Image 1 (tube, helix red, strand yellow):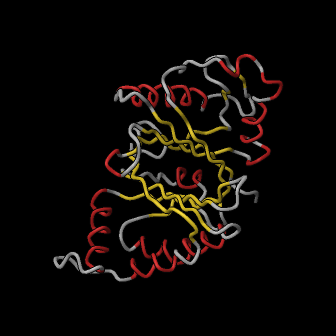
Image 2: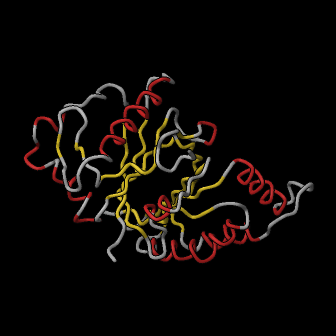
Image 3: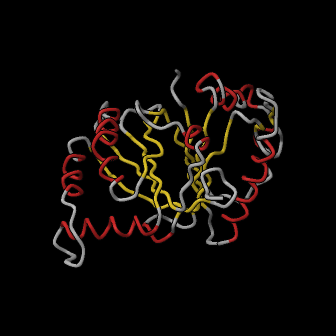
Length: 254
């Protein structure tokens, strides 16, 4: 079985016009819904919507929760490259061949302020998003975790996440959706969790209680132990961002 290849993109909107993220999410999910009806392998580079293909699958479209510590406003998207490197990824790469004119024409010019893309390779044991969707999985809230680790230690860190952190968070209503090695560098990991508001809040309180900051709920000292364990791999910032799935996107509840 070949490795799963994904693309995660963070899109920012300035000035602070709160309608722009909504316009972008609607535009994106509408045209990708049309692409799901295209024939397999029928990729086309257009002047307004970049490449049209069912192999470049928009599996997640999220609005980043603004109160979790990032510049507003932000949209995060997750793309599944069906067929891996030789499939959807190749199709995305081929749009840059000969630097064609329609590569630079877009229906959303001036809508976005900036975008940052991370190519992702699934770590061993990472769930396949296509399998989760086939099982009907979706969550009302997601947690996007990014971590800077020691060079060369990404897969070791993700193995610890899968073996140690995932069972711990499962006890607190969080499900591992994806564990990824960021490609073309050797020091960044991305993890995606599915949960809900009640589970998220209970997790925060259990951690506070373990720190002696909340005496009204039971502590879970394993949460503190995990942070110490994670620091064996970390070499820079680690942070979480809460994501709300846009209605109509595949990882959103129906």
